[in-house]
Image (cartoon, rainbow, N blue to C red; front, side, top):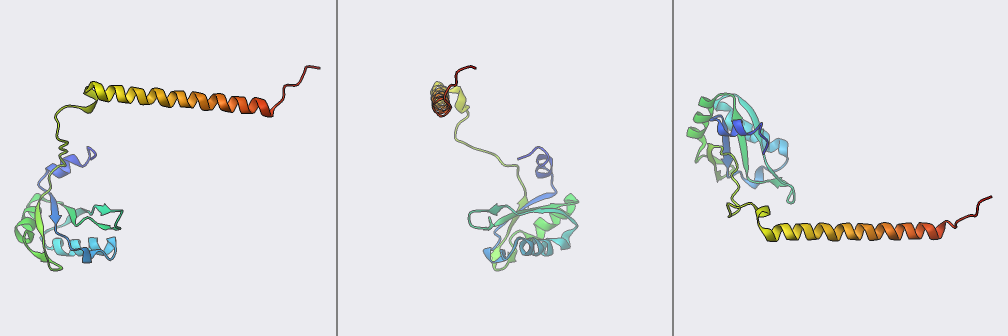
Length: 150
């Protein structure tokens, strides 16, 4: 997540909208138009972000809406949280910054095993590259016979 998005997500203007129905996926333009039409009555919308599942070719079932004013966002939460859109109940709340939880509070590169594994792999790759270079040099020498001077 870029640092330019962080202040927006931590503000009270950015909303998470979950529970979007897959039937809304005719096209991305249709999805955005539908969401905009549902949330526009509460105030001017600055932006709408709809994360895509590129493998399936559809949206992931949620969106982020940023209002110009925080009071408008609060009004949208009050009115739209629990509302239905295309037969599915929406979850609407303040967007939270993404928090990664990898199950450890220790960096992977701080372990000796990781360091050995990474350094060993690099040595093997360098050795293979050198061998390929030598093979190319040998094949080039075979193709071009040495000519004697004049």
